[in-house]
Length: 236
Length: 348
Image (tube, rainbow over all chains, first blue to last red; front, top):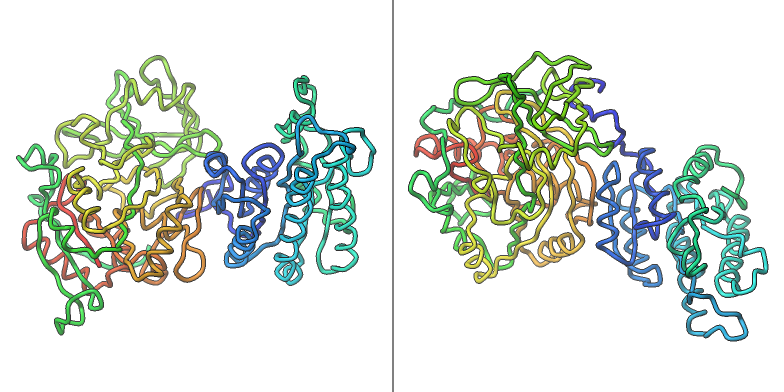
């Protein structure tokens, strides 16, 4: 408390940097959103389940915009970036929303192509389209793009051909984007195995309680934003 | 604090001392003072607009089809808890994101309570049921404190709390007298009282007249009438369907009428760009003044506010100071009743 009319010292009235985070109603997305909100960022967040998003956002410090929707919907993507732009941003785009595909994951020999197409729509085209929309603002503001990736993008794990190849596409697109956009930082970030619903879907019926909670990677994520290293692959 | 936009003397007989039901009226039987700005008024030739006197049940005829009444669905908590064997009462104002509470200490005075300035950091107060409140640090000028309570506060309030009451209401009234028909999510330290006159029946008539309703949620903190302070942060949410309805209605020429100053605060906190809102959730410390103006709200239904209350700045931002001055002069002259159980004022 620093005088009359000032907000209390819990950091919930800081206006400043603006981030778009997709898939923020649970798991890693919610953990990153919480970390950014506590750090004073204003967030534009989405999730397919509007009720879950509203419940998650209710507990965030600060004031945030909620846009329920699907990153495969062009109108929704436009609304996300347009809202962030009208709010004065974005300074950061976190492409976190993603899907695993069928659970258990089928081998490539029998992978249903419609399901594979959906994995690519959500995990590859969604983030790329959002990046395209956000780039003008990010360039002018010296902003950053964080694309969430996985070791499945680089390791040939059996059964991970759908999700892993989509993440490999994300990584290569990130590399090219980094080469093409010197005014913007592009980090493709591998958070490791985390105790999330998606990870449980990848290991149905297995006990994943030995995996760390998504909150554990937040300090490294905030350090990444603070340090602003050159564009590249980052293991949180 | 800058000079008040409106100063006047509130005669004691214009304070509502009990719910209208205790005065032989229905909930919706209170009076409604309408102030219309020059643009909203019929061509009357008066640039400050016009003031007219109605009953609250006249409301359907005073709005237009396509107008949207935005209501706060926050319910009132029994937020006052007595400190056993002491004249003190704790008012629980606001639950903070980190689990602490903003609290106000009050001491017995006449038939109600008055501010108590005896708190200090680290001071412990026993609460009913064996709970303890520990004051941590001052939040505002010896009034609100950051406090820790060693039990779940909602359960404490449920078991031992009573609605917050100030000196102009000499006897306690049960919690249902402090709930509006829209209350669905408990969380307000004080009743969002502008909506108190609405009855199920009147809401039905409004819907039939083509007036739309849209909910927001804002949990109000305490607003001690002794201290003419600026508001402090409050937790709120403007849901996506409400944002969409508000934007569509405005685009189609409908008016957005906030039911209560807290609804103005929530909607204006969710304003993005010139005249649209986005679904927004979180905390707002927004203070509306004539200088800041309003971007989304076209009208306000509200109670009658005390002289020098900071809410009058917000009313002036919506109605303009000349019209507001006329409204309050007529309200005093015509014997309207002030406070949460009193009459209401529609500014368009």
